Image (cartoon, rainbow, N blue to C red; front, top):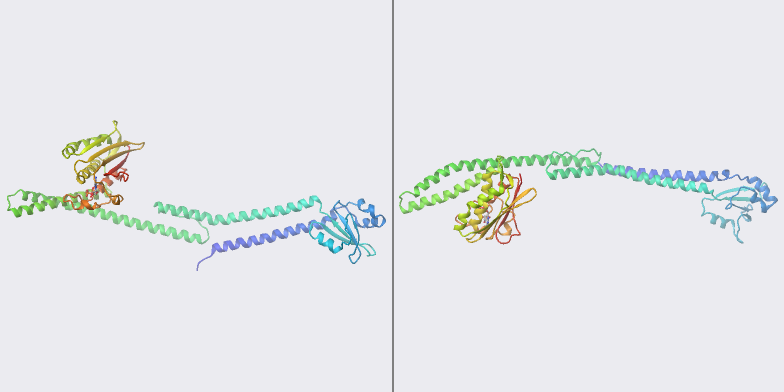
Length: 442
Ligand code: ADP
């Protein structure tokens, strides 16, 4: 059965607040009562002597006693018919009932009733509140009200904390899971349903962790398989290719010669593909590549110069803009060369002669940017997000007889990632391709 602890918590809070209101109300009433009860005792009025004085001289009686200016006395007969009023001017025809109605609004006036000995007169004493007492009464009310508000605020804070703190911890925990930190356990004891949510999230996180580890393991096994497979196919393919080449050089009948050439051509394609697959698998495996501190400007310059003859023979325009100083990066020179070769050879392979190829190096505070761009046919925008994925090739070029493996750019990206850098295809470059490679400086 589902527990309803948060519900109980709120219920408890509301019941407590209800009782608090009752207690404060009772206290206020008590304060009011004790104030009114003592009002006469506190003033040094001796009402018996007042009655005597009144009987002797009505005019001076009031001033002789310790009445306050706002006090007054109404004298009625037993039927409450007003006979006289001391220190109060009543208009003609005012009844005691009118007076009661009037005074009913002023709850702070204390009223006392005395009779004279014969009982023919009833003295109604209306004592105005003593100013310091009124103040302390209001002060008491204010304190009670403030205490009540304080109680509500602190109670809300305490009960709120019990809910807010766990929720914050849940938030933090979910954020950690988002970051991939599955070892982070959410730990709190709220004593409410929030404990169940915590347990569920912790369980989910452990479940995710196990699943991701399993997937990683599968991925590793697959990479290993690809690596071994491409490595094992490489050797027999090289043999087939060698013999096919020997066959093409033999004096064979025309048809057999053509068949040998076909075997050789497809063998070459298969061999290239296998080599690329092997490189890609190696880059994806856990094998570490050694790097050394090298001047990336010098290495890029050396690579580009090696292509000059080919550029000239293919009528390719070029422009190199490299800084005049050395900039050092940690490089695996074989892999770095491979990445640059892939980009330059793609430009040569996929563009018509006469295009322009530019290479630039820009130094930033912590990185070096190497830009390789051409003004050729470019890669359609639809491919920009996936072009670095393995086996992604632009439709048109698929039919080329000398088409590559579709692994070139993935290998380039892996190489650059191994160097702690990144590569992207600049979509703002509209004519041709602009690849921007970023390497961290050593
Ligand atoms: P491949 O081994 O087939 O060349 P890549 O991964 O190197 O595979 O390239 C993927 C696709 O990107 C290629 O099929 C090609 O169509 C396109 N491509 C790569 N570089 C360029 C370029 N400089 N100009 C035009 N298209 C390019």
